[in-house]
Image (cartoon, one colour):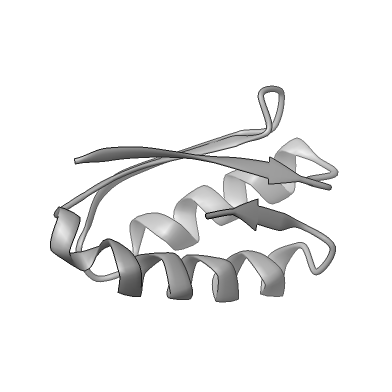
Length: 72
């Protein structure tokens, strides 16, 4: 399943690339893409794993960009 999340306060393309790398490493994630320009995250994963992936995604993104907020 592919799910799109809106992001606010993502300040640089470098941080977006770091987030993308970190999200791809999460268990259950098949693919991920973070767009600085569009302020969006696209995650491909099994639907049953999404709740846990979303929690972990918020944690890893906050470590990289503390002001960033993901609308889940």
